[in-house]
Amino acid sequence: MSTRGADVLDIDPATVFAARFRHLNIEDGNEVNAVLRIIRRHRGARRDEDVTSDANPPPPRSTIVLLAGVACWYKRREDGRRHILDFQYPGTFCDLQRCLLPDARDFLSLGAITDCYLGIIDYSDIEKILVQHPHVGLALWRSTMLDGSILRERLLNMTYRPALARVAHLLCEQLVRLEAIGISTRTLPFTQIDVADAAGLSPVHMNRTVQMLRSYGALSRDSRAIEVTNAQKLAKIASFDGRYLNMPALPPGWNA
Amino acid sequence: MSTRGADVLDIDPATVFAARFRHLNIEDGNEVNAVLRIIRRHRGARRDEDVTSDANPPPPRSTIVLLAGVACWYKRREDGRRHILDFQYPGTFCDLQRCLLPDARDFLSLGAITDCYLGIIDYSDIEKILVQHPHVGLALWRSTMLDGSILRERLLNMTYRPALARVAHLLCEQLVRLEAIGISTRTLPFTQIDVADAAGLSPVHMNRTVQMLRSYGALSRDSRAIEVTNAQKLAKIASFDGRYLNMPALPPGWNA
DNA sequence: CGTGCTGTTGAGGACGATCAATGACGGTGG
DNA sequence: CCACCGTCATTGATCGTCCTCAACAGCACG
Image 1 (cartoon, rainbow over the protein chains, first blue to last red):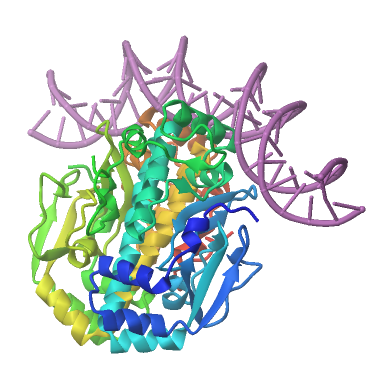
Image 2 (spheres, rainbow over the protein chains, first blue to last red):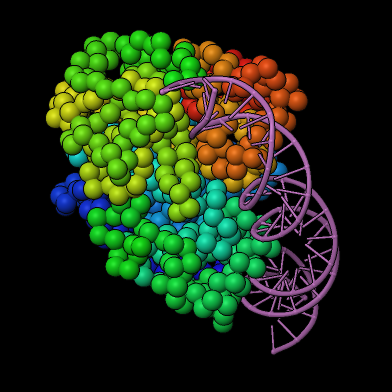
């Protein structure tokens, strides 16, 4: 097992959830606790494992929250290659859509980027909490909207930006999102292939882009991993303006 | 005024809303009527006009629903070009995010593709209806998720598909979405530039792609407008599988 | 009956994909 | 402890798609 992303495993679910719900306008500790309490079952997933996919159908009438590790939503292209639509960080309700759109035929798979630790919530408990704590429902709705925000920006980023800025932008976003849940590592737990699949580049060109970023001093030359040495430079290359993330408190230095 | 898209103007809001809410799992006519009743003000927008943008801020503490016509969400690229993220059809709550994420700094603009007819709803009425009719809130949450579905598919489509399939796919989606609200026109109310901005292609290449589609018999040769003459051929070129739209009843012939 | 936007055509060039091969590292088993 | 093996990273060369620039045609509207 690689040790990539070890940092994202050392996480306390309660802390992460509290932070995330604060972002979603829930200050009330009782409501956060109510959410934590309905996570009654757990499971792990090894790096590169499919958490849910066509082959591994998810447990029926239950939904998954990511407690530790990094995961991703992806779709398979017709040529078999993986297209990563978004990365997921601890504190995320991964498949609420399955709960709210039970007939969804979206063909999305959830994959583990690093080793992950997951919580399982029964639909019945979700339904109860939505009734008992309407604010939780609103917060989750908000989080659905934030996902949309991220997707829209990614769409913009992928559609017209050249590889260098595109990759830089993608990396900036991941740094900010990690920072937002209290992880301020500079080493991202991705392989170049992961990033290529998320940036819509071939692995070969991805590698050349990484080397370009290294030569600009934005990424580390010494590490095989994706280690950001100069986030400010990276943000500049990307013209990164993180305000689309709609975080109540964007970490300083991340808006254009 | 161009007559492009005249069909989408001849629409009864009540019918469209009923259809859309049925898709969102609301069968109850009372709830639909409750939504219709809180649309107390209206306005029009001319083709190409910005409904909301940085320059035209939206009316405060109120949200917009599209009643007739076609609109689009777009972002400006740094080079000034317009990037269309999604098209909007009648029956859409256009900017719920502003209501739920009041601090959103997403820099999204809403533009009119054709002449549009819009309804305005006060936040206070939205808040009331969410309390009185929790199902309406759920339905709107679902619609947020469906938007996400569409965005994810678009991301996939734009990132790796070549121009021909990409444009074909985009057009197929619009046909299906129009059909779903009862408009089965074959003439789409877009200019080639509109489609280029949505497909992430230069207008020049868009034009060449359109001609290619014409030469395959998928689009009309005789019309300046984008007129689909052979939807099946278009779907084949696109490898279109509309199931991602998660429509309860996908019009026949639209799944691979 | 012009004026502007949209559509059309041609030529050249840039960016990124693909193919192919090699290197480097981590994990595994002898 | 070392040899092996698979995955990931790296490099070179070629090719195709799509962009850009530039010019012109045609339709729609005033």
